[in-house]
Length: 185
Figure 1 (cartoon, rainbow, N blue to C red):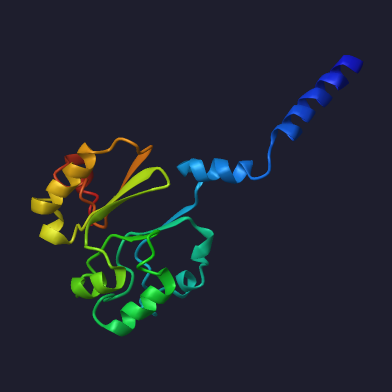
Figure 2 (figure 1 turned 180 degrees about the horizontal axis):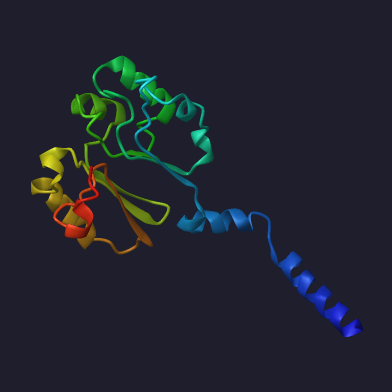
């Protein structure tokens, strides 16, 4: 019994004294899987055409990144008032807020660029991961032309990412797939 207690005490001591202050924070900062990511889309409601009141109450500071999948408001970019409200909630130009445009967002893409300070499709490398934001409203949900070239350029240069995330609004992977296309509504 004595040997068992000494062994347990030794193991506990190793665990307790091997941790240095800030070690857990360093581990979280170096591992993208330990970060907090939030993905939201279709945040509008029929009763509140701007944003769902539940979404308006979320403290987005609790997340390392916010991924918006589109259709934030009924007609998100139709006017500056709606865009200002959406921006006040999501902080659209923040480098950690990524937005893939949906059909209900697309009334005025130039207004969106003014608020996000980004093009409609782009990529970023953050927290050790690469995230590609696609514009599936462009070209009827087909990734073609310059956007396709851009996507392949990013894919060809991936070297130091632990993960690749592709953020998009439309269900582009389901079309022309017999088993999946029937599920597209």
